[in-house]
Structure formats: structure tokens, C-alpha cells
Image (cartoon, protein in one colour):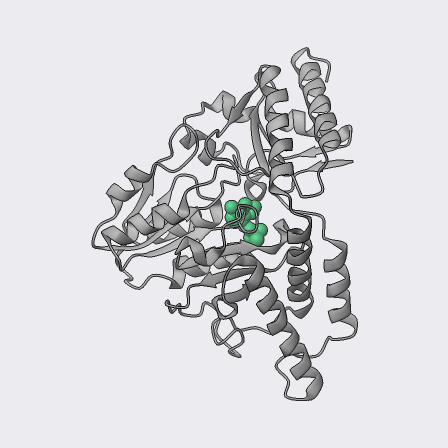
Length: 373
Ligand code: PLP
């Protein structure tokens, strides 16, 4: 099997499995207990936080473990605004876990403004900046598009937003950007940054929210006061251990130039075959969105799956919904949107398997077009 749907989720790294198993079977004690074994479990959590912070380019006290990035994003929209009635700005390229919380605010009467995308799939920075005013409480901009891999210049956007209104808080959904762009979180200048572990070789069910040390956020979950009082609930020690192990493994096996070269090679194969690359600005090497004319993505996806090639289409989390809000916001017509597949790489993807996958995908598309599937 050639698995190229890593933006949806990744295979769990062996080191992450072992780390989780060790915490489940040996170091399973309550990390909030005051006896020695509990204290040891707690200090293990802190050593994981420290390691993850080091690799993510943040300080350990800036990272709060959550159950997933959806939770991190929702937390920011529910409790990360200093002025409850101030306006909120998102971009048209946001994942539904940002878009839906924003729409919930809108339904409650908050002025929610949506910055448009340009044809390349990046946020139109000038258009976004025109929306910022003295009442802007929060701006949220996706770092790397989960649909197209386009990288938004978060550092520049954040600093220009704060130049207009220094009180505005800035959040970036970093799910497809964390560890995949070379930017440390602190270097971006953001107030909040959401990360999901299962995109990095850890299991599903663990993520984090970065909260800049200069900012206070109210807790979304209250109770026992875990995570420095900001996210109550007994900590998920096995998955925190797995997260830390996965992050180390990811960074050890990361090779930006090699991954980018594979993505570019795939882009060339597809364009040479008459397909269109969607989202062609500053791109992450990990994601490639391809519009294959005349073939519905879902049919290509299933035909490729039958031949052992796993690819994505649309957002993983909204795979069952029709249409694609983000691709439409880039100006793609409904027919084109239906034909977009997403290929997403991991650090272990080889050139040979990527090329073989492209061959199979194109063969399947050809058969579909000629009515043979
Ligand atoms: N944000 C982006 C950009 C994503 O790609 C995803 C998942 O695909 C999420 C948020 C949600 O992440 P999680 O599955 O950890 O809730």
C-alpha cells in the first residue's frame, strides 16, 4: 500500500506506540496523586512538554495539552477574546474547526468578518488588514492550508495586524504547519497556535494549544485544575508520551528539501498529463492538491484505493460534506472542485512510491474518463 493521505492522519510512529504502551502498562499512575509514582508520572508529563516545546520553538509553559486541534481552536474562539463584543476576523481558507466556532459567534450577534483568498489560495493580506479596526478582538488565520498546502505568511500578517491594533489577539491554526515549515512558534509572534498530534505520527486524541506567555486565556474545561488550571481533566499520559516520542521521531526523519522535491516531481507529472495544480503560491512540501479534469475525486479515490494507493479529497474532517468551501473561495467552479484530489506526504514517502502512485492515479482517471470503471 502507498499511503498518501498524511494530512488527514498519519501512521503512528513505532516510538510513539512504545511510549504510549509504557505509560499504559507501567507508568499508569494518576499524575495528580501525591505519592511517588504519581509524582513520577507528572514529572514525565513535564519532561514531554519540555521536549515538545523545544522542537516546536516555544517555551514549555506556553503549551497546554488538549484532546485535539479542534478543541484548541474552539477554546480560542470561546475564551480567547479579551473583548467579548469586539469583531472577529477569520479567512475564507479556514478549516471547519475554526470556521464553525466563528459562525457560532456570528449567530450570537458578534461581527465576524471573513478575509478573502487570492486565486493562488493564500489569504489576501491587504483585504484582511482592511477588516482590522480598533474593535477587532481576534484574528485567526490558518498557517498552512489543509486543502492546498499553501503557506500563509503568518509572521508578517500578525505583525501588520498588531501594527493597526496592538490589542488584537492573533491565532493561527498550525495543524498542517507545525514542524512542517521550519518556523518556531515563538518566532511567528502569534498569541495562540493550535497543533494536532495525529498529523505528526502520534495517535488521534491529543493536541495542544500554544498560548503566548504574555497572554492569559480562560479555561474551557474547569474541574481539577490540571494543565496549570487551564484545562481540567486527568492528563492523557500515554498520548502525551506518544506525542513527545512522535515529535522527536518526526524531526529526526524530516528532510524538507527531499519532501519538496517529491511534491514538485508529482506536480510536474500531473501538469504534464493535463491536470491543474490547485493552490500554487508559497507551498508546503507535504501537500499537493490536483484537479484532474473530467473525473470525480471520489471515484478516483476509490479506484486508487482498490489498487493500493490511498489519497485524500477535500478536508479530512469534512469528507462527508458536499462541496468544498475553501476551494470555492479560491474561485474554483463546482465542477472543478469535484475533481480535486489531495496527495499528502510524510517524511518516509519515497520518490519511487510517489511516482508509482501518480501513475496509478492517472491510469485510474483515464479509465474513469473512458467509462471503464
Ligand atoms: N485544522 C486543520 C488545518 C486540520 O487539517 C485539521 C484536521 O484535519 C484540524 C484543524 C482538526 O484537527 P483534529 O483532528 O486534531 O481535531
